[in-house]
Amino acid sequence: MTKKYDVIILGGGNAGFAVSKTVRAAGKTVAFVENREFGGTCPNRGCTPKKVLVAAAQTLHEIEQANTHCIDVGKPSLNWSALIKREKSMIAGIPDGMANLARDRGDVFEGTAQFAGPNIITVNGERLEGTHIVIATGSTPRPLPIDGAEHMITSEDILSEEQQPSEVVFVGGGVIAMEFSHVYARAGSRVTILEAMPDLLPQMEEGAVDALRQESERLGISIKTNVDVKTITKNGSRLSVTYSIEQEEHTIDTDQVVNGAGRIANVEHLNLDAANIKHKQHAIEVDEYLRSVSNPSIWVCGDALVGPAQLSPIASYEGQIVGTNIVEGAISKPDYTVIPSGVYTVPALSTVGLTEKAAKQKGLLVKVTESDMSNWFSGKTYAETVAYAKVIIDEDSDQIVGAHMVGHHGEELIHIFAMAMRHRISASDLKQDIFAFPTFSSDIKNMI
Figure 1 (spheres, rainbow, N blue to C red):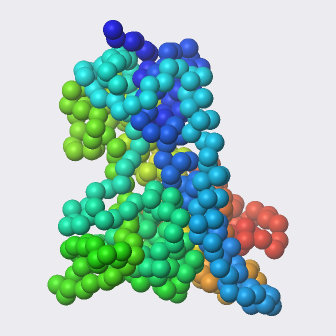
Figure 2 (figure 1 turned 90 degrees about the vertical axis):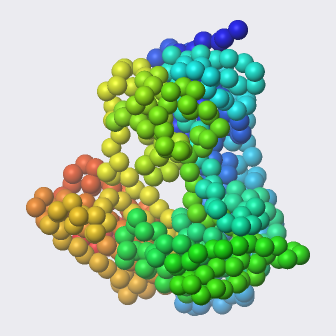
Figure 3 (figure 1 turned 180 degrees about the horizontal axis):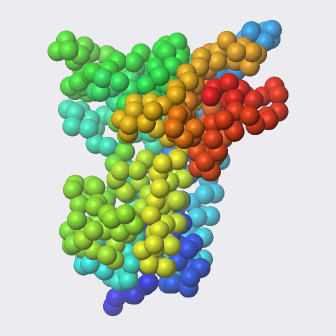
């Protein structure tokens, strides 16, 4: 017997729940299929629990600066096991809460879905037919073709491992690697990052990445680029990583090796070909409305969509768009031009809009203001170890087209730049605005 639904949602994360809210409000029948905890990666094994560790690292950073504020403190000691238990307790109720919300909106099937036709999926031996099927299956760690890759752990494992390693190596220098490397380094672990590309975070503003790299190295993090990792071997309780730089071979011994190469769309298990879903490996081809180009019954959103940044707010945004298009017809398109985001190192790197390089490639005549704010009164007051900003303004329109910060509470200030960009508040108007003083926000007019 085949069970029929208006909308079948594959995945119980932010994207899927955003779809369900819209379509259920419109009276459509819904089925959820999820093979792990409801809530998805971000709240259960990603950004939310990670921030508990980042908050501890932030506190260690503030203790490091205590002497500057004329406060005498002893050397802090982080109880890693207790921190992991705190992190787990903070998120313990999320899966059940989200599963209950899913049941309020439709039927729930726990298991792994596979397509068995253009509108048919199977799960645990049951057949479900959907007028619309939404692929919101999230992402999974990118596999690396390295001999001994099975010895690597992932960021998810870090969030469960109660023993702090004395030494750790990240293979890959992406966002995940940078964030966890700062947590480990501030907790006292020796950290090495091995990045295959010539630069860290190549899609981000070069000046901001340079500022972050300098701060990372100040913490004692060893960063090596243009690296070719050859093998990972196990020697008793230790691991050896063999790699080459410019054909010169090196070996490093460590307690732990982490896959820091980022994540890819989690669609391999879906049997996409059975549903005539055009794709290139894990990248499903969609039109401007987030609908499959080859099967109009199929929609894709969240981390399962290849191209946009893998960010929780984007997943929710795309889910809202897909829900709207299912209910009202294909009328809504995503706009990714103003998406603030952050790399939650300590201090954080925050960004929105175009880099200087991208702005010039688009042919814009730009005014660029680059600031080292560590010597500004605000920076010195709070003993900032790094305080960097670059703001990019289109001279023809006086519109801000990009802003990039490291430190200086940039993870909060970046939203002021984003709001100015989204609502077309000119750089001149923002510069003339009145901010409470003394605050980090009041420094914005000096960054423009």
